[in-house]
Amino acid sequence: MTSTVDSAMRTFDVVSPLDGEVVASHPVADAQEVAEAVRAAREAAPWWAGLSFAERARRLDAWRGVIARGADELAGLIHREMGKPRSDAMLEIAMALEHLAWAAKNAESVLGPRSVPSSLLTLNQAASLEYRPLGVVGVIGPWNYPVFTPLGSLSFALAAGNTVVFKPSEYTPGVGLWLRDAFRQANGHRPVLQVLTGDGSTGEALCRAGVGKIGFTGSTATGKKVMAACAETLTPVLMECGGKDALLVDADADLDAAAEAAVWGGLSNAGQTCLGVERVYAHQDIYQPFLDRVVALAGGVRAGDQIGPITMPGQLLVIARHIADALAKGGRAVLGGPSAVQGRLVQPTVLVDVPEDSTAITEETFGPTLTVSRVRDMDEAVARANASRYGLGASVFSRRNGEAIAARIRSGAVSVNSFVAYASIPSLPLGGVGDSGFGRVHGPDGLKEFTYARAMSRQRFPSPLPLTTFRRSPPVDAVVRTLVRFLHGRH
Image (cartoon, rainbow, N blue to C red):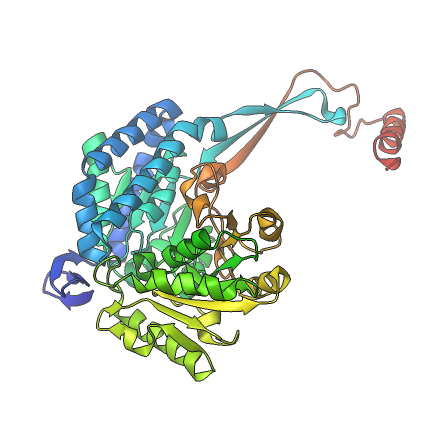
């Protein structure tokens, strides 16, 4: 991505990491344009929120149909803008559509009005609860999964009754515009879903534009800047940040399955996955045969073929630095190494004997590298996995103790005997703890993220115990004291 300035407006070029060719040029939306988009979204919000859940679901389903019919074109655009293979782009689109379908179908049952029970002291009150839309939601999306990840916020915010202003990554703006055009094709040109292209200044302006919430996905460092900007207007935020996910392999694990998960989890999308496997802790009893399997599988993966280039040029320096630090501190490269960084391509690299204070262990690498460490037992594996400041996802491979091991890992999600399966299940929430962020997308929690809870009570008949009045009598106070002792004093 490069920026240029002309006499009319500031623009930027999207440069394909595949061949260095310019894919397209896009405008950098300034603060005034952001404010105008938010104003238009705010005007459209009452109409969109006023539709029934069923009508919104019908419109979201129509959008889903347009995306599905144009999936080949969209996959080609993803491939061109950020470099992942077309087949992987199609897999991303398929997963995204599953979540879009779930949000449209389940919004009413999750968010719609429902009765809730009263207490003994408030039996005369009927109580109800519903989740109402926030109005306008701003979404700042990533480039590594430019359909799957933002749709986790876009579709859920829309299903909840919000209008949305979406700022896609400057590396994949065309994908964001494609999704907007697909929505318009299905639903007309009301400003229900708008897309603003631009750079960090555009995202900063969106944070300060007074929207009801910002849904952000990106690095932890950028997330902190987003939070600081949003704090000025008390705009709440949903933060999907980085990860340094671990995969744990117990002595009784299916080693073939574990090795395949480690290699796919670490190398797919050229390692540019927040939920990707970056650290592996293998029980000493199976360490060597497991490592042999990992090296054999990873050695058959080639950048430029099964995996694409590194999308962000600056990340190449990070990957090289992490490899160098691991080797300088006593680690060994059993596959790849410093020579693996070849222009925009990084060949698979497997590092062993890497100390836990190496940046290859402590910082997010975001490249096709794996550290594989020997541990005495799963107690040590869990301790090392939890030592990270990140806490996004994790994987555990064990035939007998997988769930027990998983229960001890501090992360937003864990998969047992598979890699990242939880992210593909629409009814499960996705999000992290610690430096991986807070808030959730997907599932019921993902719908509620873009709403506020609205409680209502309705008096059905006068209370036999009038409590909230200055006419309250001593006999009523005596009854209250008796009830307090009866209801709570025996515990």
